[in-house]
Structures are given as C-alpha cells and as structure tokens.
Length: 147
Image 1 (cartoon, rainbow, N blue to C red):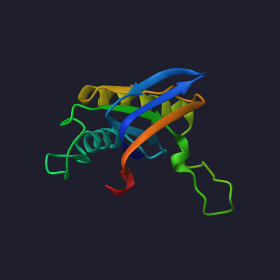
Image 2: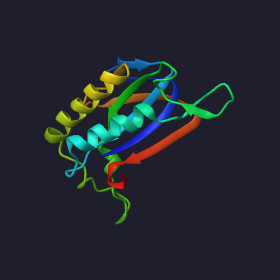
Image 3: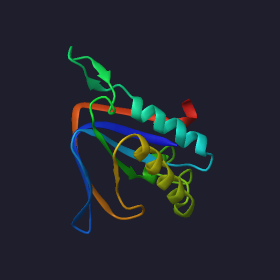
Image 4: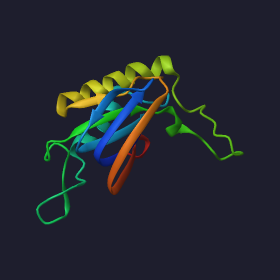
C-alpha cells in the first residue's frame, strides 16, 4: 500500500464537473494498493496518516497532526502510484491491485480514516479532476513495504 500525503489549505475532487469531495485545512491523500496488502497494512497506514506531524505549532515547527489542528482528509484512489517505469517510457501498472479487489480496500481505508478524522473521498475508478492547494509545500510518501 502506498500513499502520497500532502498538507493542504484546501483540496477538492470533481467528477463530471461536479464536486464530489472537498476539504479546507487538512491532508490530501492519494492511495494505491498492490496484491500483498492486508487489513494490517490499512490499519498501519491510517495510524501513520492521522498522527503524522506536519502542521506547525506555535513555534512554527511541524509538530502537530491533522487531528491536533482539527483538519480533514480527502482520500483519492490512484492505481498509478504503482506505475513502474524501469523499462521504456510507458509505465506498467502490473503491480497495481485490480479494481475489483482494490475498491473494498479503498472503502475500508476511508472508513477507518473517517473513524479518526472527517474524511471525504473521490469516486473509485472515475475520471477525477483533483485540485490540491499544497501548503509548504509539504509532501510525504509512505509505503507499507517499508514499515
């Protein structure tokens, strides 16, 4: 399981010209799954994300989590996080989990996040237009293969 986490002042996702998810201060989370991912990986990732200290404290030090600042999360499924570019110039997505298996994992991921932090999401498998106002810019990549 791989996530790209961006601290944002705002983020939204459009599907067919309609906003389906939108947040102000918080984290935009792009998430991809592979065939070795388990519920333990999802739980691990949720704990890391909600406790990730990337928001500034009163001394302007990144020492607060999204929970500490009362932020929200926008979680977007993105199989292209498993794009492999080692051979040629067109990425191979063979390591990305097939949609019928990835969707239940994405839904569980969002459900567990929402138990901790108000979480909005895109529409799995849809053509989405994601707007991200990255603050900092601050971007963190977490891969459960490296835990």
